[in-house]
Length: 70
Image (cartoon, rainbow, N blue to C red; front, side, top):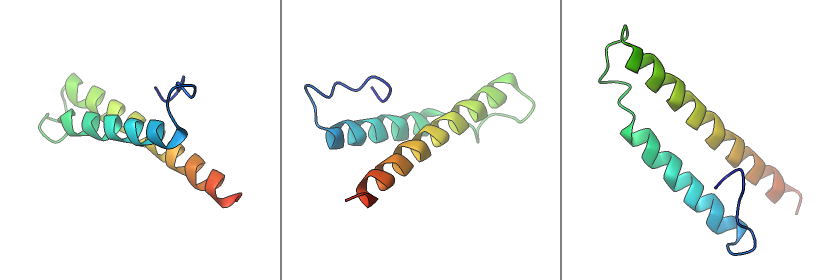
């Protein structure tokens, strides 16, 4: 949804809200704190959480930059 946004059917704001909501829910379901640091699931969960945080930061940074132009 973030990479190939359906701009013909939804507004940019609605897409951003939905992407943020989906990524926030995904972060809630990652059990980084519940896994032991030595397990493979822990490493995978930390990588996924870092990727989601990076994508959220990129989205918000892009939003702030586009708002600053006006």
